[in-house]
Length: 636
Ligand SMILES: Cc1cc2nc3c(=O)[nH]c(=O)nc-3n(C[C@H](O)[C@H](O)[C@H](O)COP(=O)(O)OP(=O)(O)OC[C@H]3O[C@@H](n4cnc5c(N)ncnc54)[C@H](O)[C@@H]3O)c2cc1C
Image (cartoon, rainbow, N blue to C red; front, side):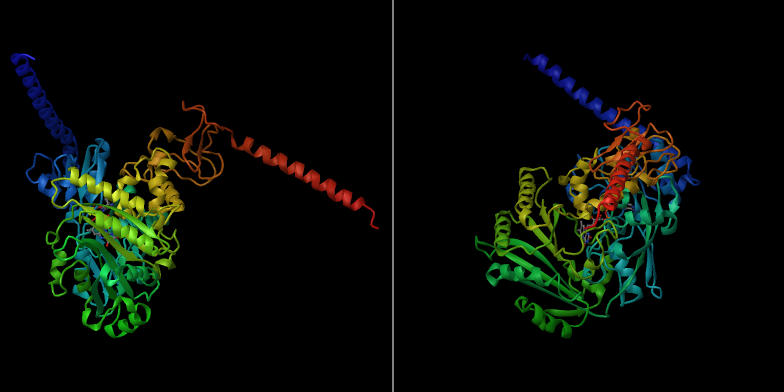
């Protein structure tokens, strides 16, 4: 290529780059302009609202977006950001936000604590508004009634702190990470150190304030039990917006006992962990022993070992804990010297790796807790992993470059008292352990460097290696540890069940789909793993019909219905040419007058009943002949 030619092509490339950048910038500013005008024109106080809405032209846009990106994996420049951030102080602006986003074709992402494992509360590959609950975090504790109302933007740390300011003998059974937001946490179920005694956090939710897709504010009574069921573990953000939860607080002793001890392979970690699987899920409900497994070098040597950290919390005194452990789990070697009796709120600090003497105010300091930078996967075991399996897992961990961690929580106790369908969270009776597998990207500028990619590949291969030892059919996973590796497809049930049945199991997943169809028929509230996609992704499948018999599934607000059955065709209204059929695998639109393809079977209800009727007639006739012949047979 000649020099002049080279120069002009470089110039062309630079110009086209500049053009595309300026075009993209003006597009993003102008396209969010319509949304911002809508938000402003629908507000009574334009000055006040301008301080609650941020677009990329505002200097504070980026810091506000970044502050609750709790997984720094998503802080890279290529992560798609919202067109507009809205930080409401009251519910009216949320309603306006829903209205304007719908009107101008934006999706909504809802962020409370920002801990989503896949960053789904603050990033999306479509134009979106991020509704950030940071300004809505009030907490009202009623000690006499043992309840608390907590707004979605509060964190678990803030909740614990507020309870502990009122009383030492009540608590809420939730997780130990202080910066996790109650908005997202409860929506996925939520486990914590009290799960063996009181179940999941969602089991202890009494009521909610919830905004639906039409901007209506509902409580438990007005939303009905189905929707109230769905938002406690089925991923609330698929159904609408949680404004606040009403929680049932549970009794705790004035002092609880905690202990931490480590065991390495050289100290018998494998055998002790093997026994732990039998003991921890079956022991007294007052005792919860979490474990964390690391592979690390022994001192300054080049030899690696496995270290298992056992962290116990007992709802009682050391005097009652020790005899229990000596009886059931002497191998663990817990002694009085390592036991500490502290307030329940202090135990949260200890489980977060802080000394119990740390002032509890730290629980309300959102920036005091270091952010993580990782990718995770979850599993549940229903049978103890044999020693040879543990050894295989340890070997795999030892091959890792010290970026891996397993965090393990035993289940059992109260968890087994709930049926799998009590709320969408289905991991109940029979679960021994919940396992979180993580790799971090510490020391890496992003999750796409060769080292980071190697770590992700390692995590996936650990997942494969553990297949024989964890639950199957389905291989269960925790929806609050969401993992897009499980799949995102949702154009039909078969595709969606790959991830949906792992999070919720079949019955719950199907029920979630049906509830979603009813409350958000146009699938406005969506995420890559939204229950609704299976039947609603293609909106053309939904047609207006006005009457019919059966269970109405479609929303009356949008005037359409279809009828539930797992086994047969049901007409979806008086227009008998129109049918839906839910099979195990997909929703099939039917009807000849709609321009959609004729389904494989397109019969109306009457035709469908004819074969049954004929069968009855033939059967009746045969019985008649048979009894007649019997009567006529002479007895010997
Ligand atoms: C460090 C760490 C520790 C954790 N510890 C535990 C633990 O001990 N126990 C446990 O069960 N889980 C734990 N988790 C998982 C945690 O429960 C989930 O990540 C949870 O979804 C986080 O909620 P959030 O509000 O902080 O996150 P966000 O990222 O704000 O939200 C998560 C999801 O909830 C949706 N959402 C948020 N607010 C609302 C709302 N107001 N209305 C409707 N939908 C909303 C979001 O859109 C998103 O889909 C932990 C996670 C991390 C990163």
